[in-house]
Length: 283
Image (cartoon, rainbow, N blue to C red):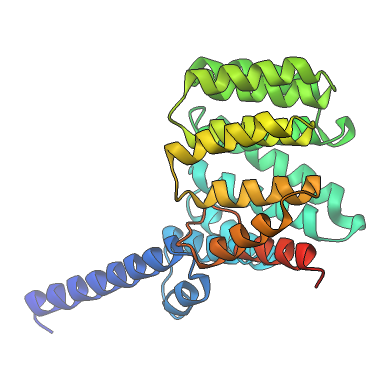
């Protein structure tokens, strides 16, 4: 085969692979996880990015075993990539959450170790930092958790994002049952980022959880003025209503609307919305 023809064929193959990846990424971003996998799994020579995208699809489908398998392969190919270690940690966290009691502690420890590795490789990986913070807040000390560690990480978070740092302090205060302090931190976070709908939702959820329903409702309305079509807002509001056993018909309507909304992987899974809808419908 002539060199020019060989180069042309190689170039065409690479372009085709890129095209498949981009199509699969588009489907992933639309939460069409099965469709994304159908494009990716037949790819004969999978690079690290392809392996990670496959793992992300499985993760979003809550198939933690397959997600771990593909993230591990990606880490083996590119062991200095912080993002890949972070996703591997997430998959072990999901395994701890959904697996048996016998394996939960081991998988939770692996999640922590992978989050820490991700941050070691890239201290500015904010998503890994936030996930490690949540681990420290929620996990018992014998598997590496602890509010003392969370406090140190909260200060680090605040250095890069003051609003997120206040949210982190609110999580710690709430865990310690210091509810007025937690509320103050959430209000400060919202003041620092008044156009971020998530900060407003955080406060609205907290107020509802602690019985301040009238103010919670006003805060949800403020969030709606910022982003009327926010799927996160629909889900959070419905969840808050159901938790408080109030406005249940509105909660049903919000969940039904959520199920037909255009979601992204950053939104709560549709399956969670279906479960809430079954709960409120008595199904």
